[in-house]
Image (tube, rainbow, N blue to C red):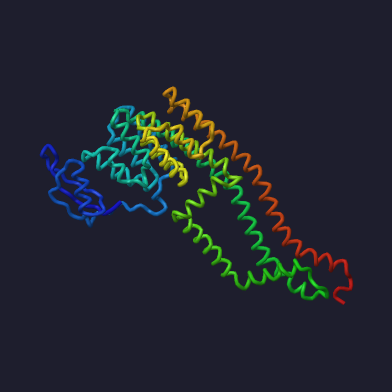
Length: 406
């Protein structure tokens, strides 16, 4: 959020006001005041003030928090409550630290004459671009409560998609962790108890038993290497995905994978069409709506393709034709968009398209899980079963040979 500054300034009506403001530097503080049509007289760093520093774990506000915020603020504004009072109530009731801190600063800015949308722009990690743009549209049309209600529905459906994705990943993740945990317990704690027994057997152990016992010895003696490799691998993958090339390759894999391509296309299409519909219903131009909608897909390949399509629309080409050129969206979506352009009902048809692909995504995830679950169970059984059998085979051989220890 920046450094807190105390200031004295002259408003346009000649009134002198005092207050506090958060800025990255003194020059930034002056620029913010001037943008509010206030002439600064004195600005000093407030060293005794506690700046609202957002914890790392709280810097990103959940979609569910944004849905609740929009719904409650819309309801309060609809009753005629002043926006300052509504924000103060929201601040007191919000559990999320980042959102609460941002609302406090936004409320202070409003009391000093700033617009809600302009104050929200100072917190891009808290208030997404689509929300700020919609608030600007609501302020321009005088229908801020309606716009916020629309955004509440938008974020509620977005939250539903996110929960569905998390739910789809939960079961395979649990099975994977259980498999790794079971193998570690067998290798480190169970197999060593059989070592002395096998050493006393007058027989050559099967290859699989020798391999598993050897791996068990290595894991016991050099466990820290395995741990370091696991942590290093995780950090390396995360760091690679944080790069532009890594993110591009990852998103390309999601859209080109034979197994993941269909559900990923459905979720991208649902997010894009819903965001486009929400923005256009509030009077946002097609070009601006395209830019924002592309970012909400969370896929750099789609975002770049939509940016190219936006350039084509600026040159007077049709939206349907430009999106069709990308080859990233289903034919049904493109056809619905074409009908919308011909009939002048793009926003309505895009919303219906979003609802359709939401349902298709749910069905697709269910089908994918029906394939993943038995595959994960099979892998779990093969891995753990292989370790167990490596121990049981010599045991069976020993029990069938009474002279084994003679």
